Length: 231
Ligand code: CA
Image (cartoon, rainbow, N blue to C red; front, side, top):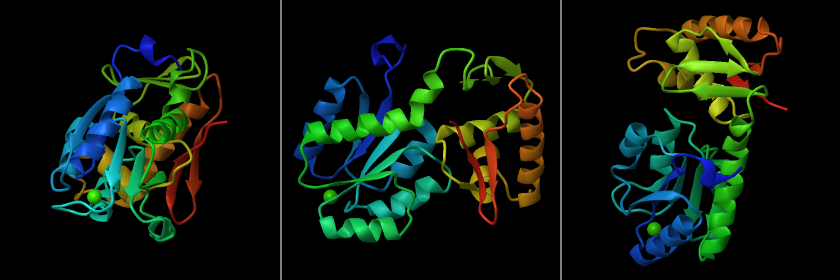
């Protein structure tokens, strides 16, 4: 992927309360072509993510205001944004992974900023590169027009189906629960049931399967939810 060719750089959120360390990391990320917002406190993070939809979040574990674990849980309740946890303790990493917080990667302090940039780049590649594939292969979403193209063919999707496909495809391979999908597709989901998700998914899959590609990248995971799978 040639980031320079894109109209807007990927926007990252960095949450780190050690101001000097945050500045160092911010500089390294900016030099690599990313737009970066820095926060030094956990309190406003999940609300900011909800409003601004960043491309990736780097989140320190120990933060004033609200700790990284709580913030990560809050974000995962509504978003599949790629997320890297930062921790000062190597021994914390096993525990963090055991908690199944939904972080995609972990970085230990002290770190070399260049190494962090490399990890960010790798995670961005896993998360986004397939979407930059040329027309005719894979899925392409035009979020301004609410148009979806599957292997080059336009799909006639309802707004709810479009949001479902966006949420699922945002990170291939990750299972999303029905509750997470409901959060992604409705602002207020108290009045709808899990069955609603199933019926929208059924319609979405039917449209994907009846396209010229005749393939359907959505997989049901028994007892858990759904995931988007690409080759
Ligand atoms: Ca800290």
